[in-house]
Amino acid sequence: TLAVLPVSYANLMLPSLAVATAQMRRLTVYALITHAANLLLSLYLVCALNLGATGVAVAYLITGLTCWPLYVSLGMRLAEVTFRQWLYETVWLGILPGLAGGGLLIVLKFVVQPDTWLLLGLCTTAGGLLYLGVLLRFGLNGSEYADLRRMWNRLQSIAFGIARTAPV
Image (cartoon, rainbow, N blue to C red; front, side, top):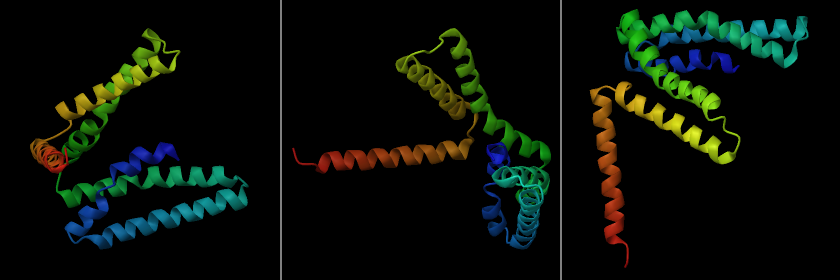
């Protein structure tokens, strides 16, 4: 079922978008179709083919992947974006940090060959820092930077406010 996570997480904001645009009916119909197909396919794979939990996982993967275009097209319609905009802003900017961090981890596996917990921790930290750096440099737009700045300022005011009122 992990194979379907990129598909399901790509549509995570769809219910909020549908509520915000008062378009819940179409999303509900799509969800009913998806879940009914998943249930029927699961029952077939489990009862008729005796696949057990594997059958349920396969049914989830198949229905997730086959219904994905419905959800993407609905999301693009509700957000009023083109496929190109969606591909760039959602897929590319979402996957770029993972490609950078994951790519570094693959390189470090062969170059450093971490065989101790310390080396493994250092390699993981390097991959995580590159992920964060690429995310902050390329993955955020102006309003997201402004949100981060406000959050950081708020955290600082809370921390320094608590530090000033703490007894000495």
